[in-house]
Length: 183
Image (cartoon, rainbow, N blue to C red):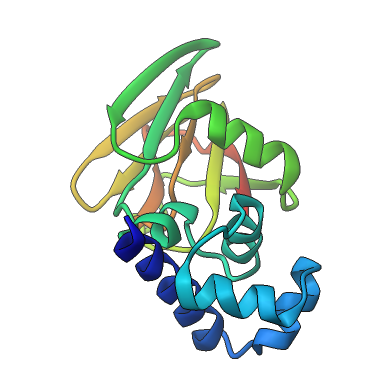
């Protein structure tokens, strides 16, 4: 167990150093003296989960990655079809409730996106945070590297946008969707 805690401390230290933040600055942000913070990094013992969560949020890193040393490639798809919840392809990581909790606290400006049938195929992109898409009208396909999910008016999906994804229009009429990215 002590070896696992020491590895946790090393991950916390590595993340802080990779983001070019001093121990002193991190200790001040977390409201602890420098000796306490140094002990957290050196031993991994008694690091509060709130401190680890603060660092994960500050440095835009998945909390699970700091705690376990591995980052899931894909967390969760959660599709809601016209108000009925349907879980699709459950992966390790965030559950729907966790995503909802995060959305309630960190929301960027919602964007209204119109896709035209004449647009080029979906370009796959990836970025941090979580993403929510809600189809207002028409039909879109959410394209991932290894699958496609068709969404019609009234459908929505939560997903991890670190996984390369893109959207394209289905059918002959333009489609409109709202996207919210929670960083």
